Figure (cartoon, rainbow, N blue to C red):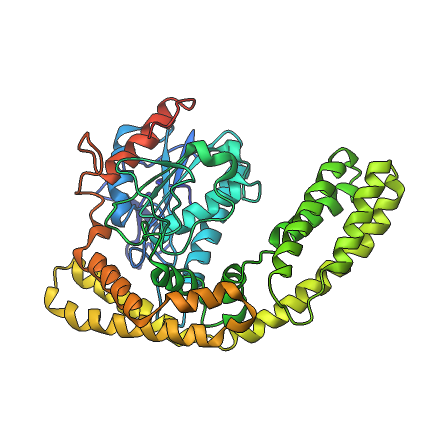
Amino acid sequence: MTAPRTRKRIVVCAIGIAVAASIVVIPSAIADPQAGAPACPDNILVAIPGTTETNEQADPNVPVGMLRNVVDPLDSEFSSQELQTYTVPYVATIVNDKAQTYGTSKKEAIDRASQHISEKAAECPGTKFGLTGFSQGADAAGDLASKIGNGEGPVSADRIFAVGLMADPGQSPTAGIQLGTKTTGNGFVGARAEGFGTLNNVTASVCDPDDTYCNTPDDAIATQFVGQLGSKIDASDPASSVAGVVTTLLGLDGQPLTDTLGKLNTAVTTGNMLTVPQLALDLAGNVSTLSAKVAEMTIPGADIAPMATTVSQLTDAIHRGDMFAVPGLLATLTPQVITFASQFSSMIGTVVSKLPINEYIAIGTTAARISTNAAAQNYVALPADLGKLVGQVNNAVRKTLRALPLDEFPLLNRLADDLTPGRVLDEVLNYATSLATDSHNSYASKPLADNGRTGADELTNLFRTRITNPTAQIAS
């Protein structure tokens, strides 16, 4: 893969039929200021643009979109040994004619960013990495930072010098550090359950309070409902993409249990017995939490009791120091977890198959069109799309609630009671107004801090500070 910002254009010309074997190499008339940059800089800043700002064939060495306002000043200030940048090329869509949706688009951004970081980290063991993103790109960068901070990313957390998120749809006021004006709502697609882990103190975000994508009001349950479902929908694989969201809506999350079980199995098979007692306690806690939640609702065919019994036997054996019994109990536990997961997945699959996926795709298309026209100041086109969005969201919410087993899940029953047509209408009008006022595209022009700095200025300063002084604390 081409090293960041080391382009060198060369024109090769064959001259004359009589001297066909002779080749003249002519340098480009415009010299690249980054030509000859070192392959392994001190720092690489990986930037993920927002929706429609890039594509899969884009040049990763050329900053684009809103993040140019963050990246270009840094490129001018630091040498290519101190800093190089890489702009992730990806489909960057909400929905397109290839049935690619926000969920697949964001996954591609995460995968491509992870691949580049992994490759450069292996090539350059002394290089540190930064992450930044705008809008959908911030959602992807934030998810990747969460993975790294929780020990599941392409590099260890100590290889990350800073993370800066702009208009992050996955924002939480309790995760990371807010720069500029503080906000109280979560992002449009819902907060990240795992937070940023060990990267929490080097992860910062900027959010315009008027930007619904990163600051959805706590009481805007219809907007949250649509955002969390719509952001995960993949028309090519609806069951797996929506199952996680439905699982969250139902109040269940089996991922911590399976993750802990995997770590426990690894510890035992590799002989790392010092970590086994704590992992067993963690596993018992996972099962206890899941048991309490399962007890609150009826899940057809799902039985957690065998898991709970085996985990109890496992922790008892470890407490007695009977480590010889651990492998056998783990061998019993693993298929029990798989059985429960398959039972639960079967129920989720039935629910997901009834979800109005096309409704969410239509919402994404209309919202993108409103945002585009607002950015272009094409206000004449807005009223028709605003009216259309209200109808689409209302239909999606009603159809989704009809698809879910409300009688079996009190949480969803309460949600259905709260989502009256009038409330949905009010919320969608607020959301549409936010799109039309274009606060989402003002991060390079609108001051978000008392000192007059814009959101882009705040992130530029964040990265400048961390590059110049890696031990500096990020001030909110």
